[in-house]
Amino acid sequence: MLNPYQTTLLATATVIGLGIINPVFASTPVTPLTEVTLYSQGTSLVKETKTLTLGAGTTQTDWSMLPTETDASSFFIRFPKTTSPVSLLEQTFKTNWLDSNTLLQASIGQAVLMLDPLADKHATPPKPKYVSVTLKKLLGSYALVELPTSKQTIVVQQSDILPRTLPATLKTDPTLQLSLQSEKPQSVEAQLLYLTNGLGWTPNYVATLNPNETIDLQAWVILTNNTAKRFENTKLHLVAGELRRQNSNEYQSRGMMKAYAVPQAVGMAMADGTSFETASHEQLGDLYLYELPHFVTLNPNETKQVGLFQVNSLPVKLRYVYNPNPGYQWYGYTDTRADAVTQAKTPVSTFLKLTNPSTGGVGQPLPSGLVRFYQADSKQRLQLVGEESISHTPVGEFATVELGKAFDVLARKTQTKWHSTPNYQEANYEVVLTNRKTLPASVEVYENPQGDWELTKESIKPANSKAAPLKFVVNVPANGETKLTYTIRNWIKR
View 1 (cartoon, rainbow, N blue to C red):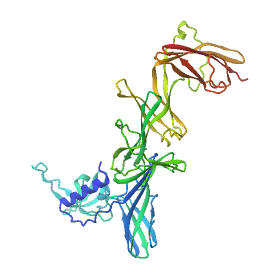
View 2: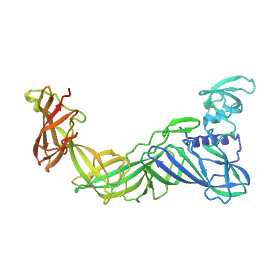
View 3: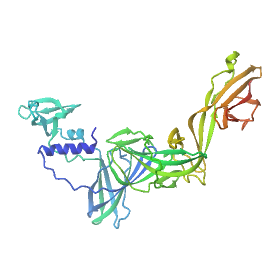
View 4: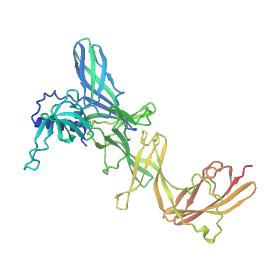
């Protein structure tokens, strides 16, 4: 599907090629200096700066080449360096910019060209012949036209019609018309601010696991431009955090409300040993603002990746976790079969605790994003070992990510006994942990009792015996096995 700029060029080239009009084109507008602040929810604040030439009194001028996704209610113009006052009398956002539909709509009642249905379409080479008709009405993909000689009205395909002229009321792209008043002639620097959708950024991390429980972390930014506008040599600011906006996923365009999806994380290739400049950052209220150190060009419908920061030897801690029944109690299992204790063993989950200390760490908050973890094999070739998204992680906090399942560390939970009295129900549990690795493993085992409960007996003391979930840390020797037993009593309320 052609965007508005491509449609304009195609329509203009067609009418010029036919020799129908001889338009006088305005000089090519100077590309304004552009600064863009990208928010993680898909909203962007654009600041364009250029010089306007004003006469004494009222001057009408156009600010063109705006994105079609612009929020029409968000325009704000400033004159930061004027020597003589400038007043904004009114501003009009032209939503009837040029495309194939508006071009035909503006030609209703006018003479247009129509492909002659009697022309020899099978000639070699084909020589289509056009006749002049009057466009009466548009009906879906069809049009009513009036023949000049017989005045007969016929139905034709819209694709067989070419307008003869470019209507002056149509703009080649979204345009803001400004009415400005100045006391004297002057050239002023004007800055236009507006909100738009269609631009976005997503953090993306690459972490290389080291043998000494550290990682080398690279943070990348995936930039997306889903608009038809080219942002050339643009200064980019990135805001991490949750920005509150009314109807933040909607914008007004062409008089209609449209929804734009927030750009999602995309996997892109990374070069081993890549080095890049670190973006500066600062706190912005309860948000964080990152500034890329170099100018970036974003072409229409383009995805680009740039470096944000990198840090080596960031401390991490590997965790094995067994949580067989999160969120509910496993009471009442009374199977007394001989094979009841031979349930299938399941691999425990492997987690990585990624810390972000205030000293010796990243030195800045980690925006939420996808982290891919790589580890070198015996021949120092990096292999993917897991990936998961992290949430916003301030300095001094940590993020926990699940890498997958441990192949050689297994667990099996069995309810060995259960009985009930008028005052309580009681269950005995046994968790057998098996470690087939050549190194010892420490496994966190979780129990999630509900209601009015009490831990009455345990073979290993939990980290906290009074609050759920219970957490038992079980050390399992290399090529060995450890058994954890405990009893939960649940009081019956009367």
